[in-house]
Length: 211
Image 1: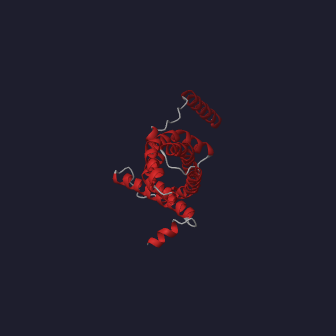
Image 2: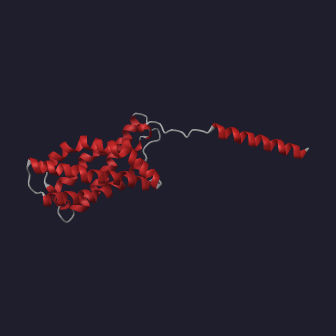
Image 3: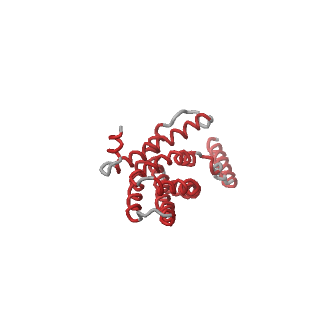
């Protein structure tokens, strides 16, 4: 077992480990969220395997950016001090976090066959809430990451913490009434009245023609 872990966390396989781990743990996070939905009876149709697959696919796409981000972050800022840790956390929150949020929302929109406008609207609607949640969760977690975790384990550490984060992401993404009920288009009563009048006039003309 020890040999197995040394192998998958070696430089040769680290990229694949981080990418695959991101996808698998994204599936785990969504499965937990769906379990909560089923338990609270918000979900009466059982597990949505397609949704889990979509979340896992997006996790695979989020793995490579985080892998290379932490790799080069440690390369260019190798020193561990309060100043460098604070700098790394700021970079993490202003570079990789927004990038992953956009990949998450846009990628799922594409997988769900949404239009460009629908994807853009969803990003505008949900980005700020997700990003605010991100700021509450990740800075203390990343302090531990940059202070105590070895560089080759950074992405996997992030992926494990991300299981909690993914539950939140899944909740925000798939809770339709989170931002209030969608407004129904207001019917134009004058247009409806004109349409009824035209239909009645047409009926009268048809009746006259039959006579």
